[in-house]
Image 1 (cartoon, rainbow, N blue to C red):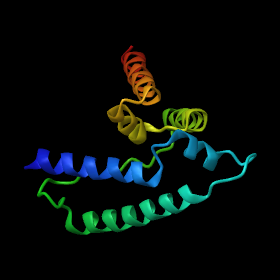
Image 2 (image 1 turned 90 degrees about the vertical axis):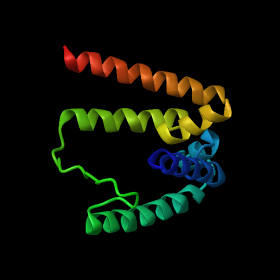
Image 3 (image 1 turned 120 degrees about the horizontal axis):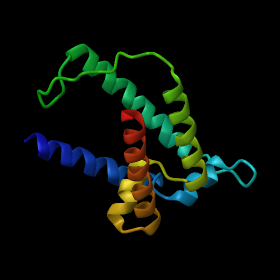
Length: 136
């Protein structure tokens, strides 16, 4: 049952990304690039996502249990270290250059878009390299 719920949540998330335009790199770049006619529509998508997230986290913190009965373990680390800052910078650079972040990249990969496939392969390569770098 847990796998079915996870699949349905992922499916709903992916469809939401497609409907909102968040999986369209050109739309994202039009939002991020202020030197051209700015497209503010994704700001409303982000505000909506933040509102849903705030409500969701408040409910989870109160119940201490997910809706499927699986315990939720929220992060407790509040340290801002070099790895976090470098990761945030790399994420922002990648998003700004490609107009894609990991969630939409998986959606694009599922649609067979070459940009999405290349992004996911690059992301996985980066994860392997960081893992090897950290372990040595």
